[in-house]
Length: 412
Image (tube, rainbow, N blue to C red):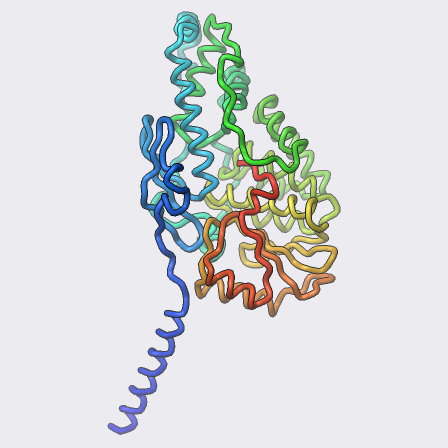
């Protein structure tokens, strides 16, 4: 018995060693320095400074930014770019509030109903911090949820009645920021200026505001302008009608449309971007399946990722090869092309070779059976892959394209 026990213990030890060796063969997510990612010249600008430590979970990067208006933390490179635009806009709006025109506008505010004061500052629901979000949960298949609660980002009825909403959207468009952003500081500044313009004696022209910074190269000017104009010109209630009508014409069922448009993680901006891009995927089967997948978004971070995902699908469809069908596996989308390859839109910042990436990529190779599939996969990633991840996926037959936002417009 003693000899057999020693053999069992030895065998178990061997298994543990092999398992440890296999585990060690994978990459561990590594925190990075902001300087490594952005270069020394990208760490600070007017009103802000990006902290050096960038926390990574193997898919997304968490950025911390100190500014003249407070400290911010965002998940994802795209979210960082959006935040820096918002910080610039906050600075410009604060300059407006110091102007003589604003002071005159406030003089007329005393005539406004007292109840209006309650709608001056929106307080978007805070997201839980300290837990990996976004692509981490998308790829690790963490628990999902969906709700039909009223979207908390919509303007109040009082504000809309007094045309505050229209002024706010106009100023946001001029500054190239999202009027439905969850950035509380930005919302306070936008609401304050829009309030003074809508209820005060203030003939304030939008031309007094500087234009927002130029974005990335626009690959589809007509689509981008259509979305931006709709966000500027239409109130939330009207956007909902427009987006619902587009989804209905695609054959999306009423229940699914309502669940999507009611989902609190998707703002009117994200709803509009998604509906516009799905509309451009005319004739592609599975748009309802993709929309059902998008409902698994648990917060703003994940909603942004699905919004980027559908824009990658539309961009590939229009600029590389027509798509025929979109299917889902776990929380990923796989798009079949007419020519034969299947494309996977991957909204990640930095993908490393982990056991999960190994499992998912291997499973797709053995189980995916799209109509007309020729056995080849393409990955379109918004960020980059580690050298190891790129090598392993290439050996497995995947063709990887990085930084696809340089090829197709991805609105935030």
